[in-house]
Image (cartoon, rainbow, N blue to C red):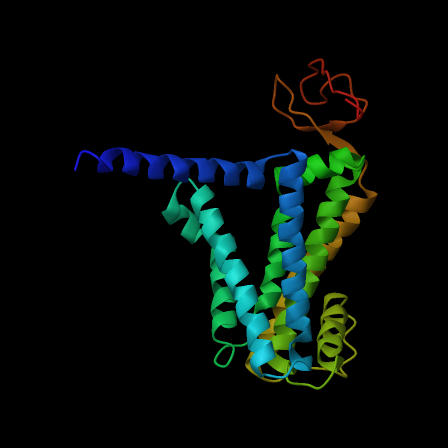
Amino acid sequence: MAEQVPEAGKKTTALEALRNRLRGLYYGTDSRALRFQLTIGVIDVLVILFFLAGPYLNPGSSYLVIDYSIAAIIACELFARALVANNAGRFLLKPMTLVDLLILATLLAPQHFSNFAFLRALRIWSFSQSRIFEVVTTKLGCRRYQDVMRACIAFVTFLFLISGFVYTTFFYRDAGINGFVDALYFTVATITTTGFGDITLPGTLGKLTSIVTMIFGVSLFVRLAQTIVRPYKVTYPCPQCGLSRHDADAVHCKACGHILNIPDEGM
């Protein structure tokens, strides 16, 4: 019994080392961490492409091999994120975790569930809200365009999510690319409130989908337009009053007049 205690301690140490290594990859800002996060982003894009290519693939063994391979990658990535999380219960209740679990379920049982892999696009939106996005855009010299880029990503993500839902629910079995093009055409026409009427969604679900698309789509479109025309501001909390948005060349806080020391873009 006394000989088993050091072995258990070694296992715990190895697990902690693995968790620390994964935390460095997920939350780090060095070149290795950025390459890892870029790889995860490429995987997200490949999952979305597999979703779009679904109608072209025969529902045979080759399709199932690709399907289960993607499911295995998502499962491994979920397990890695669970190790990184400080609280497993909170991690399981996070929206992105629930989205990945739903995608995993549709991939593991493609005969019984529709392919909801398009939800993986939410990962691209979540990346735009992360600290890593700020680091990458700053290194690329695009810091002043962060708000515009975030608004564009949010709008494009919503556009793809609605198109993917419409495609999966109403057009997924159509031959060729016409199904997704019809779904995208309907979404754009609805968001812009053009409403040509040549493509409509049947039933109550179709009407509810149109309502949600119009309400949220117009809101995101207006937000994107406001972000583009709005004067450029930097994020620098005022030490006196806490106001966080200031002109790039501001010397005093507009709210309280406190002297600011906003660093230059190159610093």
